[in-house]
Length: 388
Image (cartoon, rainbow, N blue to C red):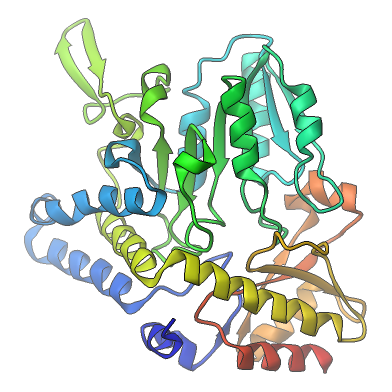
């Protein structure tokens, strides 16, 4: 990888150390330019008129995300964010009272809270499969829970509070064998891990633009396997998603765009398409390997600092998220001290991941999330600040 060129494409690299890529990565110049140019066009000619002129760029969004996931563009829809897309899909599944949903200990907070709310409304059960010692969902426990009452398996591929990559492909095989819907949240893995929906065997997948894809905030996407799309009825429809045939009849469109809204962030959608194309051109496998190596280097360096504890288990199934804590200062105080010195990181709070942190006996911890444009020199500077 041409790291010098990638950093040149990312102007902020010249003045700060950005280790908060799991929150929002730094966009490459091409993405920012595409968004600004469309906003300027809207200013000059009008919103609808600008969208008409950008029809090719808007259509390219579907091809770009399909290229990222190795699927058909008809299986892709735009979403305002991953959580919105995730809820669209959850509410479209044909549940019946007494059905069960299986999810993992590391499930994303918003997803799990949505499940609790949904279960209360639909009279269905939610069951949590615990992680093994390696931080990954216990596949044997999952297998034992699968029966005819299970309607959905919902899994977060990479949790916000840990760098562990879940065995999404193995879960997909189990789901397909038992003919159970499988919804995968790839918000943290899209852009830093290879994602092939055929290999993953997921029926549905959601992702966000702002994290490792380096796209604009307020953008996301969803994937629906073409073979199941007719089984999923959106909770709401509008003129964009149906063919209105008479005063008493309509037909929902037969692709993933049945989950879209007519009114959306056009500039953001264009920018996300540019970001996905940029990621594919850069090379997802090479990106994944560099991110993994940088994160491993950081974990090793952190373990050598007295008073610092790294919270990832000793496994090779790790990615760019590195979590740790200091016995000398609180997570928030350390985060603020680093930020004052031009280093971006984040705090993962117990309140946002109760299932996982309560089982692991953790309170608020620090998180550093690396991207391919980060460097070993930045890691050295980061650790130097911690040692002070």
